[in-house]
Length: 489
Ligand code: BG6
Image: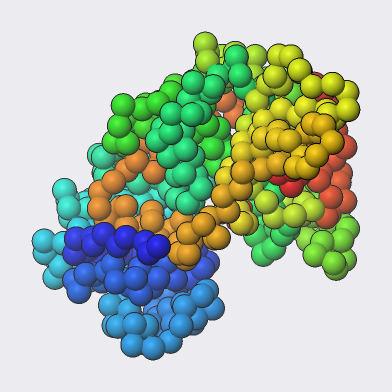
């Protein structure tokens, strides 16, 4: 089976922060892949912008290296791709270079203009203000902002305000790259394109939901940023809450952007508060110490950071509940962390046990059904069922998965989330982007947790690198008589 390539309209994409990590690791390689797939029209150009003076040739060399380092290959397509690329030195926080930028973009009349802010968030305001002042924020222009969108509700409101002063909401694209992952979108297909699940998708039939986003890597070169954020801000506020929304939302009337985002917003608003009264019971913070990962010894977070005093969490587990008719009483256990035992992201929907077993003791225990949606690695969906162990000699039951591992089921390359999201911006499709009120509602729920932690005045619990986090995270779920699913089994 081959994937369908839908052409996009002519565009010029300006990448602010073009020499940075995100542009090199994700944006440039993603655009190359789309060119390789034949999806970019002839009139598609990429304009790298950063403060540093650099010739366009030097930037193209940089882009070539980025493509080759991240899965691309040299050849005529790479040459064609590089010919689309140009570079301009522009001072995001001053006025140098802006006239030249306006003149350059003026040469692309009639094209969609995408401004991608792959910069530090402090520059979002100055850049948007100048995009407005230099006439680059007209109806044909869209702006893309990356997380972190604030570090709490107040700062998120401010980011949204400065961007909103220049761009109307229908032209603001807030990226959460988890929404661009193949399996995340499949969650919507699974729920809303099949008659099987939706009748069971409620507290009468679902016992609990687990969402795990585990990484085996540490903070790598990002300790400086990470130490100001921590896992709750870096992962839970955005990626994990977005996943929770897609699992829990009501069926939207269509996949039109606001139809989906309205439903997600209702979920965020229905989350029961976690604050100083219950945070000690419902949340666990951890920080990794030295241990073994991928077979080798690795240092602890404090060593990597070079500071013995940080209390920033590198792991969070929490038990959330959604206070509405569909989900009342169904716990949503969320966990995420760095330097865990494996890189695995998955959603496990645990169904309730059958009300009565007609099978005798010899048949073995009945295990509840589970739907496991694996985001990475090995994207796919497994539905765990009880079946009869084949063979004569009475009925013995066994728990087996109906297994749809996408790599085996569909022989197509799995596109990176940025490939889809970047072209959605060009197409003007906001469905997979966060609306202003969603980001704010997520912070409204996260802020009291952060405040409760500050009030507790205790360090995060330590866990050895290469394990599944502090033992308190295991206790969090086990005291409810449940266990974390570590391998989908
Ligand atoms: C980012 C976080 O948003 O997501 C990183 O800032 C994290 O800390 C990354 O490593 C994980 O993304 P992925 O796609 O590798 O699961």
